Image (cartoon, rainbow, N blue to C red; front, side, top):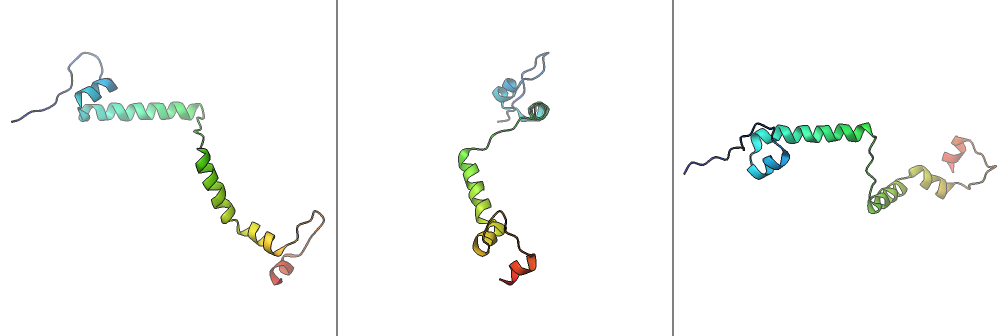
Length: 94
């Protein structure tokens, strides 16, 4: 049995609904890609920023804290005070 799915033939352009209803990918692929690009340009034009979920922010903060080598060095090897100073070579010899 030979059967093929063909798009609706109308004088108007295909819409996303036509593509989904027809389950016809070839002519719809370019429509979908154009739609994605158009929306991405609009988002860029208004400087759209999607906020990170709180859980992701927490994981990122924990990662930065765990990998803060300078902070770890300062915490373990230095006494922090506003008026304190030390030469770099002295810090590394301790």
